Length: 606
Ligand code: F6R
Image 1: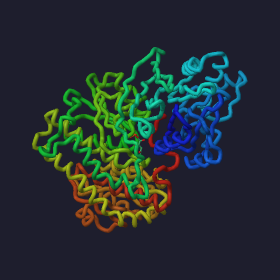
Image 2 (image 1 turned 90 degrees about the vertical axis):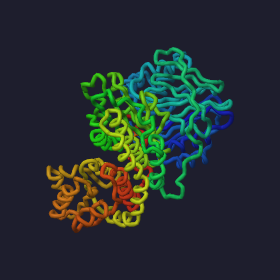
Image 3 (image 1 turned 120 degrees about the vertical axis):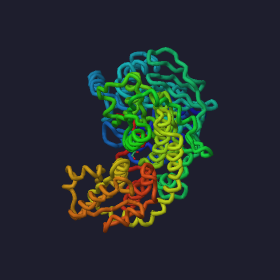
């Protein structure tokens, strides 16, 4: 989603701003731009499309200036065209904005009536117009910025520069993250520490409702009430090297193949390999005194939560309520008095997940978060944080973050079982040794690459594909369908195998492949019966199972062999074939695998 970078530099900044924007590319965007100040005037270059288009524009028409702001835009209001790209500017002000201004229509009307002329279809332009209007009423830039903040409603991270001042960036944050970075006689602002990493690791995050006045000499932060506020400077651990593809064609491929390693890293945070028991770190949340656990997240992270529900119920006998965050946050939930709530997020910035977390917190729930970015808003708002060690995930489609979330969640469910006296020490040892097997088994599953690539060649021609699974593998079917549709643009749906007869079976004909996720577990026979119902109607089943399961299934259209795995751990291992299936189907179709159309990595608007 939109990315912001701003620099108060010692020399020309447009080039380093573009470098910063490159590090935000992974978030997903459809246009980009830079604005600087020179000789007391704001100037800017903007371009729809990828950053290399902006780079070409800047080469042909350079943009000098030692102060500037840059932006990658993921369109919300107004098409992805040059005129809607940020920075938005008036004669004296340029701004970049991440988020949505909900009351932009009424503000735009008001400003138009006063004679101000708008040149874009965006909600963001009202920010520049408001600041400019207030400055023309003789307010200082900081006063005008503050007044603008008091008028807008919605979610935002904003950075602004004003034409007469080459030593001032004004920033604000509400709902979307924003960080200030301190350099040597240079200052930076950006959407996250990852964007700032090439310049500095001294990072201060604004809190909700904060705004700040940034100059080369330092910065002053004010809270929502306008009072001076102190926010802690952290030394960010984010590396400055741009993560590369390590010889793979796409980040997604690299991240799929990295999984055995990063699952291992994640395990080492929570499991002591010498004793085969959990580390204290896995016990940081008190699961004993809660009667019910609410789990919430979005997209793939939500599917990780769905799988974890089976684990918490089986190993800890803990009642779990799970909902997607965009629904949970608006429900009138009768929260338990001593309840716990667990939120899952790779980025730690997903707007709906963050809002659901804050709602649960305001209702007195104790909050745990499983996040991949330890400095993120969700991590900072949670009472207890369980980091995953997936490392930066650049491909928009989540892969290694998903399996690392599962690994962490499995450890938490085991911890809950131990704390609640439901899982014996011996059972803990058994479950953990099955969990410790998953990196090796997942690596083995990845060896089916050639076979999966061949099958994907056929899948690429399908218009619709169904995925089915049962029990702990039902969410794997949901995740398989999501992965496929987001990167190959083929319509896919996941269903609980038992639900097929209640509607979706009407879709089956010889054109519709059905991916059947069915390891040899206690549900195997039932799922295979469902598969035969598909065959009887001319459907094309692609069975993903272990050797035994494939042998006993009868004739199928195609099969992918997965290693034999403990039934409860199957989702971690079966993630590999479903990810590769989506990946190769997309590469066969030639889509933009790492940055699929319309998608963003970090979804910071609701
Ligand atoms: C799908 C995908 C998304 C994310 C979702 C939540 O491949 O990546 O569905 O899982 O947007 O994002 P995070 O985990 O950052 O909260």
